[in-house]
Amino acid sequence: QVQLVESGGVLVQPGGSLRLSCAASGSIISINDIGWYRQAPGKQRELVATITSGRSTNYADSVKGRFTISRDNAKNTVYLQMNSLKPEDTTVYYCNANAWVSTLNWQSSWGQGTQVTVSS
Image (cartoon, rainbow, N blue to C red):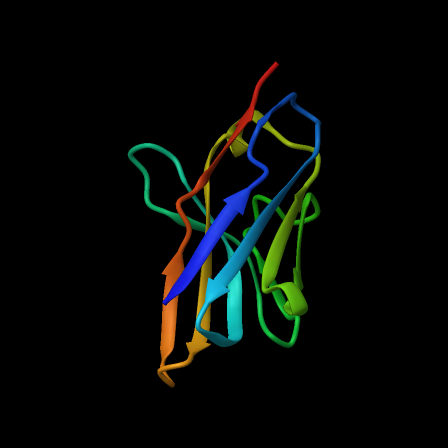
């Protein structure tokens, strides 16, 4: 099993910065894609940013140029640096990872979510 624990979500003023972290643990051999999604009440969960094991990145158009995703493979951790935050970035952010686990299969896991609130 793979467990994902997110942290870093807080209240921040518009224009401010924030860094989210997501640490993966469990019977992990390696992690392929890992990334961040967000979901506002009443809306579908949407991709924010993902990063592959080769460090190729993909961003939603709404966050390009403002958010940066990175990963530390030694720590099985992914980060999301969020700059120039806007009120519309307010929502719950979820971490997702696709991991090759000890039972020799791929497992896709989600974290419990962390709330980001952008408000003055």
